[in-house]
Amino acid sequence: MHIITELFHVERCQTKLKSDFSKGKHQWEQVNNASEESKIDNGYYWMKNKSSHNWHYFKVKSPVSHFENVVFDTSIELISKNEHGHFGLVWGFDKNMEILNRFCLSADGERLLIMQFQKDHEKVFHRFHKRLSPKINVNQPVRFTIIKMGNYFHFLINQKNMYICHESQFNNNDRFVGYYVEPGLHIKSSYFEIKKLTASEMDVFTGLNLLTE
Image 1 (cartoon, rainbow, N blue to C red):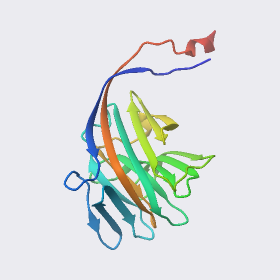
Image 2 (image 1 turned 120 degrees about the vertical axis):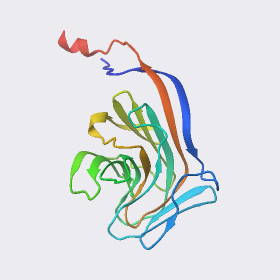
Image 3 (image 1 turned 60 degrees about the vertical axis):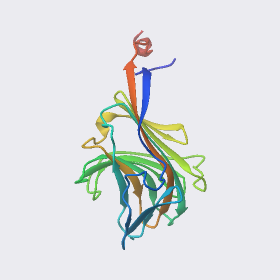
């Protein structure tokens, strides 16, 4: 028996932001201080967390509301790492950055972590943790994709679905989205793309009624 809770017909897919990190074609922050460094060079966005205790993010404002059907898609390569730590994406926050969502992979490629949390980690509102077997090969670029369709978020690593969760479990205060880097990690990315999906929900036989027969 198959159970399908939602099925959509995608009528249009529009690229609203595509950064290939060529000079002069970006909206990403470039900084260099005692705790963090980011730069655009040679077709990559390079990000380094120099601190020993604090995570850092490197953000851009999305042209698409997180309440709409949207795709965030990027490739991240781990350049150097500490023994521990995570890297990946953050989204759904405003300039005050009080509450955020994150979709991350551990630097050893063995653990996936998806959560809604307070920026100082005082509170965690939703948390999903998964040990991966086989682990993700972090010696190669890793593709992170978030798809918001209807009422659900879909999280993919290298085009493989890892987790599906209702939108109510995540923060949607504003349109900021970006990269998440924990202490001791150095990453680079070759592109970041945001697509807006125009889709209509289809009437389908869900299979749920078979459970009540």
